[in-house]
Image (tube, rainbow, N blue to C red; front, side):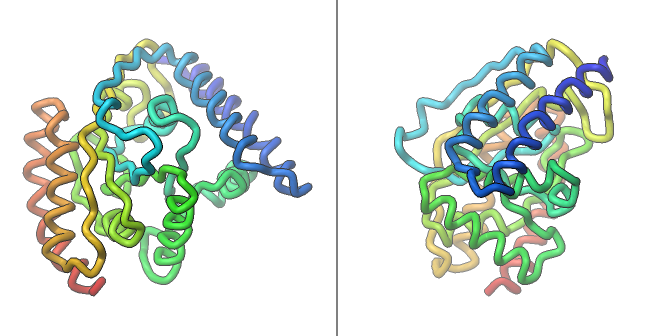
Length: 260
């Protein structure tokens, strides 16, 4: 367990954030430059933590296709790991609180990350519009349908916003299961652990029905993505996730009714 590792990776993050903010200030920020920085950052963070990365299923993705990537969310290390799997041409939808952090938040905005207000409302709708535009420009978008990190590794109830995005954009969903990132840094901890094995399981893409396909179709989509992600979780987390799924179903029915 190492506080120095966490601090080292924090420095790596600041090292790409500061120049990105400067570039934005003088009008020379470009996606290509941000992609290169994010690629180098994710490589460094994974290497510093000596993560043993095991990836399966990428052959199920079609070259040249753009995806809405949905995964479970266990750790801050989910982000650099996903960059190692999908490459730098991906941006994340993140809670708006992160964008208020000096330098870091400004860099996220400049690099094309998307802020979402988890309380919903017009701000959330605007965020989905920004994400849809990114997808239209052939950039993958990652979103955690749970909406937050799981404290115990079990899959939390899903929120419908991610699925509305996929339906609006007419983009396939790439379900991904992350196992082991919480062994590097669990929610609420500040000390990172060296040498964890992290498994990334990419499942077969799932086509999203058009938004006008109706509430039932979107609920089925939500269930299919959840089933795919849950299928590769360790047994104990799968069991707890099954209980949480009851809340997913009832919550989705209420929220979809209001969305329509």
